[in-house]
Length: 442
Image 1: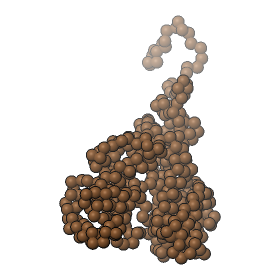
Image 2 (image 1 turned 30 degrees about the vertical axis):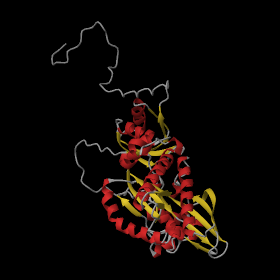
Image 3 (image 1 turned 135 degrees about the horizontal axis):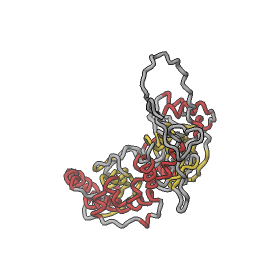
Image 4 (image 1 turned 120 degrees about the horizontal axis):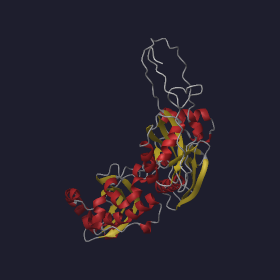
């Protein structure tokens, strides 16, 4: 990525790159493998720019050349931007990457806020790296259109289970599977993964065997403890040929306390690189969860909600106040709404919020491509609310809220109660003069 704010830091690296070039030239055979950043592959990526809170596309492999080491590095960053934009479009829209709008390099420079270096090797005229591109949400929204406002899933507790030989791990500190999930950035997926920093107590509660337990009361306690909607259980089973040799893994992606399976994938790494294998497994599991979210298969289990305990009735021993005061209390009404996209949900929210007799509306759960749940705070009766919504083009059938179909007859208005003096009993003479009610009158 080429940005004016990054030119000064790049010039500061010139001396370091010059030393790298000299060392590579002394060993021509090692020019392609001259490493500029050494360290553990699981280390936190280095961000170049300001990439907090953006849309992230990671794992982009580049292998480019240039006249100098700096020129090759900048060419690699530009190539990463060109590859990341179609991937971001495909992830948010659900369409093929080939359908992404074609953007010039100058337009990509304007919407990219940072480049994260996951791994890089710098030679005198060659740059080999794995990068992550961070797009600015606001600036990229002008090119993403309606896909820029897609909401995330409800918060889900992540319980990653790793089976290596006879050992099963979950939140143990030395689990490479747990470390791989920690490297997944929040902006890379629409799934809201709740990844805890485990204390010794969390390690005991969220162990590998907890994923197989069916005790509802214990799951309720965990859901309430971590303030989540449900649990995601990605399980990876490693199979090593021999120490340091090829390694394979079977990824089983599960959802919910019942462990409902959403899919499974077989992965292989001939070099025996565990870190690369678990990173690939994380991306595969995330793709399966995103597909399930779009299909409406990530609905939280309502049985996990703690039952509402009615409050004990207290004796009213306070003084009785005079006056004709009427207390209006908003009653919560939960309705289901079909939400093929986020724009439909927002439009229905605006209509409901502007309806007479509605004190507020909030989203209880959002399912892209399925049915979402709204809670309407109503200050009127259900019949009056149904009448008011119908006047604005929405039809409330039971707990299903939908748009009124074309040609569908509106709901007839509620007949008002008769207000006034009671009718005069007895026959009256239409031609007779009215009687006076004054004293002495006839």
